[in-house]
Amino acid sequence: MAKHFFFLCSFTFLIAFQFAYSKPQLVTPPPLPVLPLPSYSQIKWQQREIIMFLHFGVNTFTDSEWGTGQENPAIFNPVRLDANQWVDTASQLGVNLVILTAKHHDGFCLWPSKYTDHSVVGSPWKNGKGDVVQELVNAAKSRGVDMGLYLSPWDRHDGRYGQTKEYNQYYLAQLQELLNKYGSVKEIWFDGAKGSNAPNMSYYFSDWFSMVKELQSTINIFSDAGPDVRWVGDEKGFAGSTSWSTINRTSLSIGNGSIVDYLNTGDPKGTDWLPAECDVSIRTGWFWHKSQSPKNLTDLLDIYYNSVGRNCVLLLNVPPNTTGLISETDVVRLKEFRGAIDLIFSTNLAEKCSVKASSQRGGKNGGFGPENVLDNDHLWTYWAPSDKKEDDHWIEFKAKSNGGLRFNVIRIQEAIGLGQRIIRHEIYVDGARVAKGTTVGYKKLHRLAKGEVHGNGVRVRIMGSRGGIPLISSIGLHFDPFWHPNGH
Image (cartoon, rainbow, N blue to C red):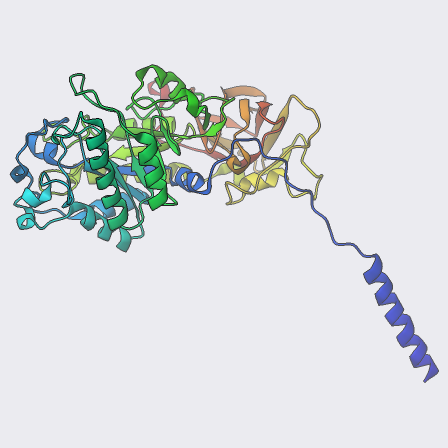
């Protein structure tokens, strides 16, 4: 009995001793963020990558881009209108947010507004009982697609336009109508477009923005000056080769043509997180015209590389035709576009490589190793080098097979949840530089100017960062079979 008692006491003491002196494995905390930072809604917006714009209204039936405001509502008669087809087309492109021109410059409203009869109520479509906005909301909701709206500030029909107080009251009333009646709206579009002969008019943008945020807490407001998303400064769908999500909002004003270059590049010293949206139409015009055809696949891929591939979101306009459907030629082209994107980026050759880096935060088991750039989280897991002062941070991939690597596109993504950092970077294959650039942001796509390369080792060098160190969340090596520079 004494031996058993001694053994039990010894065992208990040993367990207690180990428990008392064992310490949990502590991990290195993340580096401090570099301000400014995106909001939750801005991050979700950035991850969409492509959004669809739907320009539709009386201009569709008059073969024009800017209506006069004198159009008879009776011309609006899309006898086969099918919002389900619109949303299905968007979904096939991988789009999960569609934005409708609820009212364009002509003042015609695609919903039965209580504040004007210049709307669908005067149309023969559904005997004046139709509501395009509601039909699109229903179609989008049933397919898990989010809604956005454009309500043109310039109104060429309403007689109150030019009377500052009266028109702002009217505009705010319609804004409340849309944001109260149709459920969740994820983006609302404001612009400063108006003709040179339009009456002088002051818009109460601050009032409008405050009302929008009061009614829809998770919405993103787009305009030349944000406050959530900014215009890229052109309608070609191209961002600047340098593209900061940061900018100074105090330097911006809506409708100011002198700031387009600043909008295009952003500002590394900017105090506001205000990422750019690249708007462009699949056709020459924004509204449907029988004489026009969709852009070819090469042009659409150019737009993708120069928008999504330059730290922006692409807002691609696809206008329904006079029957109320998206034309089949456009549907087919969008399927080709989505298929091409999937073909290019579905395979990441870097995943078949060994990876190492110049250093890593917290050492080997610190949780910030270079292997993080190969996981499926492109935001919150990342490679972080050590805090030691270094001018040259690098991450390198080595082919494991004798065949080496064959690719022509390099993708780099930053962990933007902790700020946009990278100022300058270069890429080398077997010691030879194949690409260089400035900003990275959420996504940077290098489509190699000389075409495909063959090699065994790829090194990405970061030669300047805000906050001292870069945080890279993902890197990809891809092959684009559609890319043939110089005709080769």
